[in-house]
Image 1 (spheres, rainbow, N blue to C red):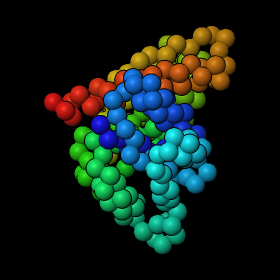
Image 2: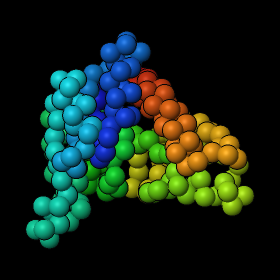
Image 3: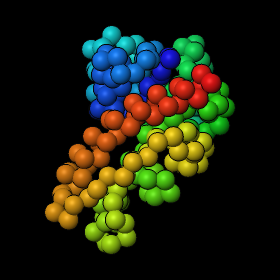
Image 4: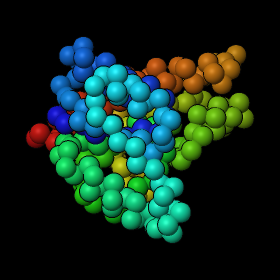
Length: 198
């Protein structure tokens, strides 16, 4: 199972995948780690695990008045050579257009720190926490879903609720949620791989 992992930040979910593979809990190999941010610590994690990396920023495209579709198409061309069975967005902070997604039908999955139909897009953890204290939700959660052009709206592979305690700080809730994410991202890759093989 060849994986390409896309990140934008510290790469803790990437690390969970690296660890699961190293511990024989996931039958896969990571062919490439891509970041759109040069200083993303996830790139360091990949290099320490001897995984090839690619820095692929959007800014040069913006500066040249090129479209997001051109960026997406060019990134897809870079990834096709790695023949990924699955592309995993693990903290990737760009929304992909069909110019990217059409190259990998039902092969791109995303981890999102909210439950289906709730808090799509950015700052989902903070928005969940605020909604809890406003009495609008009873708990938080996270999911892994197939990626479609609509943000965080694709078919769900795996989801799990994450409790919020009355005396939690945002950091408390975030830590509990990230622990859950690290587990379900591995489970979802395993589950998605079974559907690809079948």
